[in-house]
Amino acid sequence: MTNFRTFTELVLERTEARSAADAFIFLPDDARGSVPQHLTFAGLDQEARRIASWLQARGAANRQVLLLHPAGLDFIKAFTACLYAGAVAVPGPLPTEQGQHFSRVSGILRDAEACAVLTDSAHAPEISAWLAAEGFTDVPCLATDDPAQGAADAWHAPALTPDSRAFLQYTSGSTSDPKGVVVSHRNLLANEAAIQRSIGTSAETVCGGWLPFYHDMGLIGHILHPLYLGIPAVLMAPFTFLKRPVRWLKMVGDYGVTTGGGPNFAYDLCVRRVTDAQLETLDLSTWTTACNGAEPVRAETVRAFTERFAPAGFRPEAFFPCYGMAETTLLVSGIPRTAGPRVLDVDAAALERGELADPRADRPTRSLVSSGIVRDFEVRVVDPETRTERPVGHVGEIWLKGDSVASGYWKRPQTNKEIFDAAIRDATGAGDDGGGWLRTGDMGVLQDGQLYVTGRLKELVILAGRNLYPQDVERAVQSVDPAFGSGAGAVFAVETDREHLVAIQEVRPGSVATDLRTLASGVQSFISKEFSIPAGNILLVRPGTVRRTTSGKIQRTLMRKLFLAGGITALHEVLEPAVRELVASADAGAATGAHPAALSPESVV
Image (tube, rainbow, N blue to C red; front, side, top):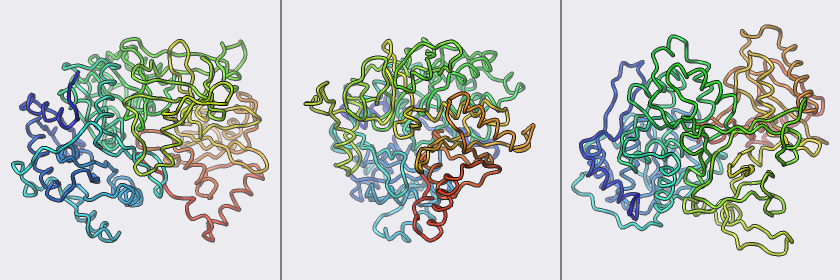
């Protein structure tokens, strides 16, 4: 679609061509009686030039700049200003919105070697104090909404190439070890083109969403893709959606949104929280592409959302299951437009052995939702141990090549060699194909040209030689009783002299028809029957205990750390003696300072 060498060149052209039109409309939380905020393409251009001039005057070209804004138009102006200045934007979560204070962004600030921090007037004093306390006295903080800072006419176009860094996208990880994906202008342009081809967006598209602006799906899908096309986008804060999910759906009808989406849990939340009275006020007939990605797509969710919102004009073929990650800029695959979700029912036992097989009568079945067709990448399914290619219909790790694949993580040469330059061995194991493959860490299978993502490699639960996917067990737990909220559980394994399954599940005590002891016993019995494994460790916890990223992913690794450190307070728990002893010993070690990192919060990206 474009002949631009950099994304900066593209945005400059779009802002000139669409000058008077709305680029972004932000919907503040209506609890304050706020009205929609409009930003035209011309307004964005002027503000970006002003802020960029401030950055250029401080030598920020080709250097990293940390962005710490609340959801809103100021973030978009600041990010665009970094593009205009030739600086490398580093979007981060505003500490005061995450309940983690500055632990997360301190790690990002150090790793990225940021030369400046951009925020707004409301948060600048606190962020300036944090920088001083951390010893970053040479890192200035700018309140980008102060019109006295910078001058648009002092800006000059930066010297950039397709391989210049556009931004760093920090991925989920511990606060002490953040990893920034280096996204070049070439990567960004390639992936925006891939998104357009896959979704079928055009000049008639209207984007809309609520995902965090520092998250890859929120940034690239809901902010940069509209800029790429020169079309309007309607946005709201994640908190606004989480507090009242109906506002997202109402936005679709009010503004004629055609494209936008979120993780699977968002659709579940709408099914549970939107009332019949609210449903009658909705019009979802314009929604042609409801993207569902960032976590495993559940067939139950697809069916439930489609049935629930059909009266509001939502069509089954509007669902767009997709797959992507920060390391590939964003999108890897998606269902062909208007094709609708494709669900594949398979034999559960065969899937645990890494194979696809037709379901058998009276035997457990798993339903896989296709993530669509891989168009703009080379894809292979590889045995993660032998690094040899797996045949079609067999599960392995997904490996990728393509113009959207980033060059690696910022200043991680050894990790980059392992993750971004992997080599597939030949059948004899004597040679390889020369490398250059991205190891995604995701397990999946190709069948009939479709990619089915089955789970994360590092989260596989291996019991008695069987590969169990935690989301399958979590789903089974949540089917036991209506008191269990969908998606509010975490399953993982811990090791003593053998592997033990642990299931943590949120429950609202007031909604339980029986007692918690009986409920836990029911979970144990059902897991044993469904998966033929012992389920001796069940923790029923209060809502909000199970940690998620802001994109909706269950943080199983963090939950395992918290569990082993004695950091989970249960309403009722059943633990095997060996596991109880393991937790007690780890808890004692933490109390003496032996495990100070055990309770470190994970990333919220």
